[in-house]
Length: 319
Image (cartoon, rainbow, N blue to C red; front, side, top):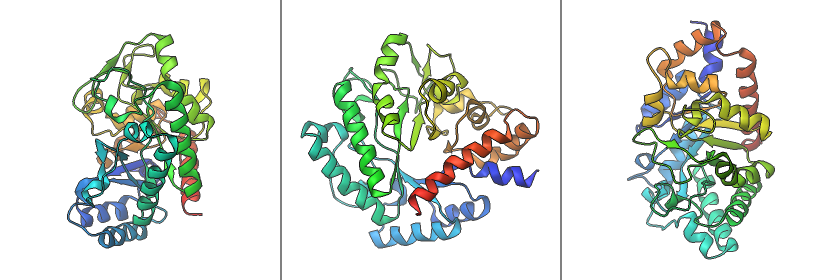
């Protein structure tokens, strides 16, 4: 295997924690991925001091490591495993007013920073109107204007604190189904979909450092999950003019796995589509990705551009 290509490609992985400190450490030392996302299982039964020590050791194993977490509040609150603190959802906080939302968001961000995290996969910029849709409880549960304002305010707060935020899940779930457990389609008209993009457009204008693309198939583009769709990424880069880091939603999710195959794993499809970062990517697919580069299915220029974007993020948090 071409080791120089392998070492480049391994940096495009943002691995899922295995829930085992020593195993995580071995993977970080061996492959040197750009980042690792931790879950509740990594925090349960541990003291804050222990978590801080573990994250510091991870950063020694992989210099300038990006350490991420899903800390949206409400239904998705990993920090709840570490303390008895209550972390309200985005929507609950915003109902108290923008100032209350930002104050609590700042407290949580400082808590994350103190523990050693430098990336929060938030805010949820999806706009949903159907209260029974799977994403609704995680959204701002407000109109487009308020959602856009809260999204940009969160992004600017994190910029000021030296932390990375992520607008997710582009191009927006709307009222579609859950891609964690199955394939989901979004049949909104172009006018409806573009209307729901307003929070993402606002995020881009605010300089959001990263955007997470959903595994939802948005049929105005094509029948591929958006995370694996060249058309969606072209729209994000060219039509919306986004120059930051684009990452997949977690590739361990069912909708991504179902779209891939042994010869064309989701990791390869995601790279071909134009993602900079493979969240939850399986490092066992590295040889196949190297082969794809050698066969010019993915250009070295594209990979180098992704590495430059990721380096800019590292320089931002480790300045």
